[in-house]
Length: 404
Image 1 (cartoon, helix red, strand yellow):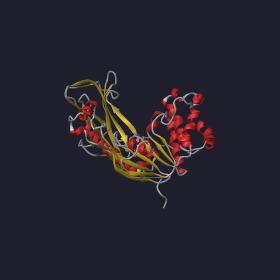
Image 2 (tube, one colour):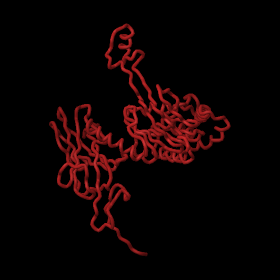
Image 3 (cartoon, rainbow, N blue to C red):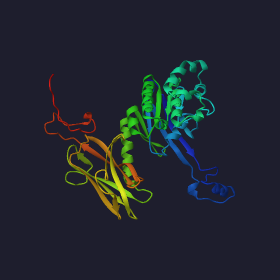
Image 4 (cartoon, rainbow, N blue to C red):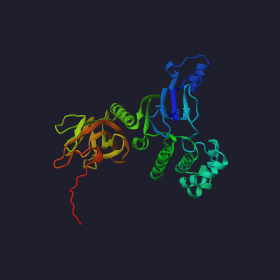
C-alpha cells in the first residue's frame, strides 16, 4: 500500500497573547510590574487542535473553513514556516509553496533571477532550473517585465511568475493558498488545469480557497476546519456540503449588520406555508423579512440563489423588478413570487443583499442565509422527470426537427 503524500497526526499549534500572555502593551507592563490583568486575556489559545488527516499521493485536497479556522496556520506548518506545538506533519517529497503574493521573492531581483532563487530554495541545481526556464517563462507570460525588478510588478504579475515557478520546478508536493484570487479569470483556469496535470503525474496538492465552486471543480479530497479542528474530511462533495450547510445555519443566526439591520429568509410552497422543500416547476415564494431598530429608507433588497457548491445561479432584486426604494419604520416583508420554480432538483442556498438605493452602498450581505431543497416533479409530456443530470435550470423551449 502506497504511503500518503501528506500525513498529519494530532497536529496542534498553541499561541498566547504577548510575552506575559496579555493582549496590549499596557497589560504587558502591568504584568511585568506585578499588577494583574483580566484572566480572560491571559489565556493561551489553540490555532490548531489535534488535527489528523492524510492526502494520498497524486491527490488534490481542498482545505476549507471560515476565516480564523486555522487554514493559514496549517499551511505555514506544512511549508516549515512555523513549528507545531505538538503532533507531526509528514510530507513525503520536496515541497513547493505559494502561500502569499511575493513570498520567497527578492524584490530587488528581476523575474529570471527570482526563478533561479526559488529553484535554489527548493534544492534544485542551476542546471535543473535552466532546463525548465523556457517552460516557466512561457507559462508566466509576463512579457517584457521579466527582466524588471519584481518590486515593480503588479500583484497579478507576482502570482503569474510565482505559480509558474512552483508548478514547473521539481517539487512532489505543492501548497497553494488563495493567492490565485488576485489573478485574472483566464490565468486562474490555466493554473487549475496545471494543477490537474501535476496531480495526474503523481504530485500531491493542498489547495486553500473560499471559492466552493473552484474547490469542487478541482479537488477530489477535502478537509473542513472549524475553530482549529477537523469538522469533516473525506470526498470533496460531502465536505463542501457540510461546510455550506453549516455556513447557512450560521448565516441565519448572524444576519445582522453593523447598523442593526437584520434579515431572515423564508421559503414558501404553493400553499403559502413555510417549507424546507420546493417542487420543481411548481409555484413558490421567497420572503425576506427585514428589521431595523432605528428605521431605514432608500433601500433596495435582493435575494440570491446559489448552488450547493456556492455558485451564484440567479438573483431577484426589488428595484429591478419595479419596486420603489423601500422605507421601513421597524420591520417589513419583501416577497418574490415565482409562478414555476425553474431550478432542477438538488440542494440550494438563499442569501440576501440589502443596499442603499441612492449609492448602492451595502447595508447587509449574506451569501448563505437559508438552505432549501428542490424535489423532482414530472412535467406533462416529458419523457422522464428532470434531474441534476440536465443541469441546474430548466430553459423552456419548443423543440422542432426537420430532416434535410
